[in-house]
Amino acid sequence: MEEEEENISSEIEKIKGVGPAIANKLRESGFSTIESIAVATAAELAASVEIGESTARKIIKAAQSLLKIQFMTAKELLDKRRVIYKITTGSSNLDNILGGGIETRGITEFFGEYATGKTQICHQLSVTVQLPQDKGGLNAGAVYIDTEGTFRPERIEQMALSLNLDPEKTLSNIIYGRAYSTDHQLFLVKNLDEVITSSNIKLVIIDSIVSHFRSEFPGRESLVKRQQKLNKHLHDLLRLSDIYDCAVVVTNQVIARPDVFYGNPLIPAGGNIVAHTVTTRVFLTKRKENLRAAKIVDSPILPSSETLFKITEEGVRDAE
Image (tube, rainbow, N blue to C red):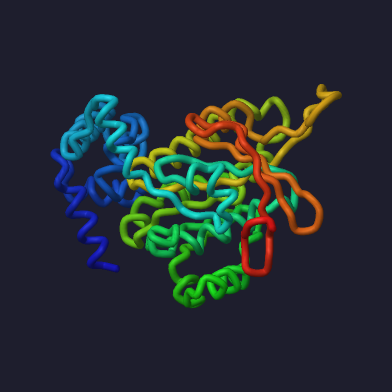
């Protein structure tokens, strides 16, 4: 571990204007890679490292120069997107409406009422991401941030065995964090850069994204502060997904609109901040017995479509 930390510090010190003292402060503040510095704001970096904003801007510009961050043509962007990877959900029906599975470089949100399968999908994905690519995985690990205490390692064991994976190895490839408050949740995400780079992480899960925000910022008088913090949190997740080519999956609660008298009154929590930031939104509903329905309600590329899947002892599977 000490050797890894030295390597990370050395990497940061490649940035013009960053000496050992500033490098240590950057690491302590969660800026442990050149990528994390390159996409930071000057105000954010200056406050974290206690330097002037002009100095922070020079450091950020130097980091961007090292990474050759610049404009590109739409053709170059298309070529870049051709190598976006997909993670199977365990259900081919669900994979199909998702365009092949959960994609990297974006945020996929699953929202719905209690017991609609949100946490089960998260457990399943943290296992399937470890499969080889020809079986729908990425040969990689997962980070699982649990805000409601619903993560169960015993469930991971069941799912791993059903896919002929070693349960102990599968559990060892899942980095677990229990978030006890909004600030703790933000802190865990802020410090993910080093975890992602040192542990071959290709999937970040937050189950659920808005729970602490709703409980700690009640009432209209707290709405602006809550939404500002939530907005920053979601953009931190987008940054991680893009610069490290990993998938981000979040679950969300639903609230009932009192002004809706006809049709479905349920909408995902978090308002427009979540709606404008996540890449793909999937609405989950419960059907009879162990059947669940999934519907794509918003996506920049996927059509609105719906399918059925089921929750079994082995995990998420196709409906018969």
